[in-house]
Image (tube, rainbow, N blue to C red; front, side):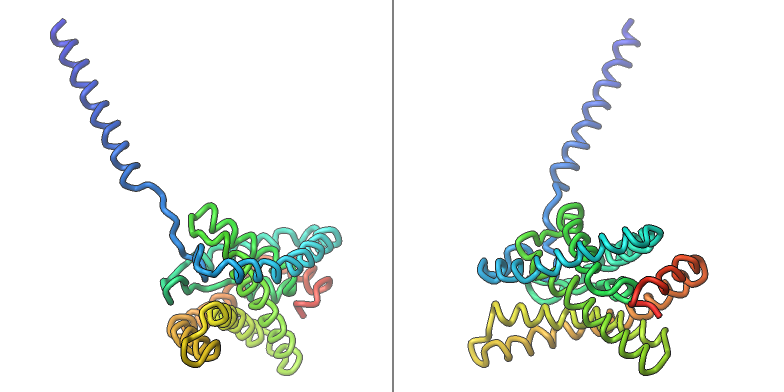
Length: 259
């Protein structure tokens, strides 16, 4: 009888210690917002946050119509759309602290822009940023309009334009893809620097002086990241050519972004 009581008491003590340990762990490791977006949550003045939301929404609406057309005319390309979104999600989740109130990271939007054009990426990139804000606790809901404009709209427009021009003038597709991915990344941070400069002009020199300051700091981290993203995008493109030739063939027939 005493042996059973001792065993029961020992079991109760271990259970109590285990529950106490888990309680202490979850209290000490309570999730906190990471403030890891290009422009972190609450960093922009309210007027600028609303302005960038207003600029972003029409592009997003046009992107939705473009996506509806693609999925209706070529439903077999949905897996390619998923690949472009996943590539953007994974690369843009790799945050590196940069200027106060912001971060640097690859964007991953160049691949999707080359494949589908810039409008679908306005939706895919925005959803990626929203998921990171909510699911990865990166924050940035009030600044989502500004961040989505720089990464999901401006970057893909630059990347797609560069790809079309280089592919047409040089005929070298891999060079065009590398350059498009790198410049889609880099231009995102040029726009981010401009957004920050508009919101926080320098006391001496105004917006331009502030733009030079933000841009020069971003360049230290973003130029190597842009080159790395260009190389990685080429690897993914080679992988698609090796394992998804049928989908790429459909893409070539139906989309203007791939030739």
